[in-house]
Structures are given as C-alpha cells and as structure tokens.
Image 1 (cartoon, rainbow, N blue to C red):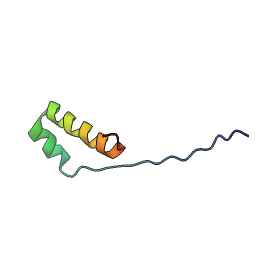
Image 2 (image 1 turned 120 degrees about the horizontal axis):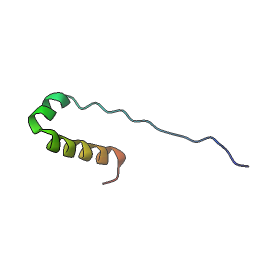
Image 3 (image 1 turned 135 degrees about the vertical axis):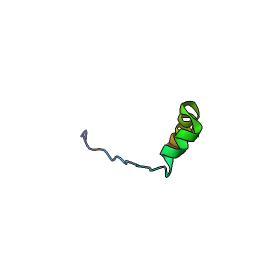
Length: 45
C-alpha cells in the first residue's frame, strides 16, 4: 500500500546584525557568508 504522507522539518534562522554585516562585507563576501551558513545548516559540509 502506497502512502502519500511524509515527514518534513523546517528550520528558520536569524542572523543577528545581518544588515550591518552585509553592508560591511559587500555583496560578494556577504553571499559567501550566506552560502557557508546554509552549508552548515544543511549539514552538507
């Protein structure tokens, strides 16, 4: 019997001071920081 049910988890994160940090780093470096954060959060490192 096939089931259409599945379990999902949603993770929300808030990077404190992100607006200021993004302004300090600039677009390219901020994007790299976000990618590093996403990699850690996903556990794909």
